[in-house]
Image 1 (tube, one colour):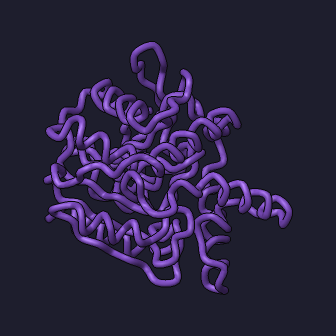
Image 2 (cartoon, helix red, strand yellow):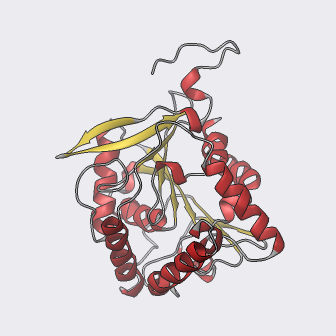
Length: 290
């Protein structure tokens, strides 16, 4: 799609995530699906997604908000959604794929927003190629060996079965609190995810989902890594009641990363950055600009 001007004078591909065209790029032997939004100049922000998350699982308010100031790129890792290949069964292999994707697009310097599983991947990326990353946003995530991360499989299956039994999206249980406010915010989030009505991404296959769960469990049970080598500025964000990656892990990251700031959102769960999307976008833009 070209960047022809709309009647309002805004390049069309820069206007909203729900209209961002589907693209692909060759990464080794596989083509990776991605979308991009925002200005053509400056350091891009690469979004790394959560367990079983495809391109349509990013909150458009978060993407649009950050893309108002920065080039944003979302993508499906190998074997996820419309990306080809076999899903890696380790966080390290996922990180290597993400690095290869970034290089395939021609970037040698990026900012990264890693949510949940994407936050695990982001930590490995910055340790493998520190010169590639300028700034890091870690949301709803935790360090290797972090408290409770090994329980993600059991929790995910339990909440997914509960959601199907009540005709709800599993993310309403997994990402949000069950307070009246949390339930309302969950419904609003799920509604936003449906704003894109054409050219939607492929659903994540069950086999890929299980492979990702295997990688997450291994991350949760491995020995903690030394994060003191990560010298980049880091914004850590989470809800105060995250059940998937317990919120204590966010405090742990703040303490163990030499140059980190922490933002915790009240009455919010794993999807705190989506529930508080307006506040999170302001804080993320301030962090990226500082």
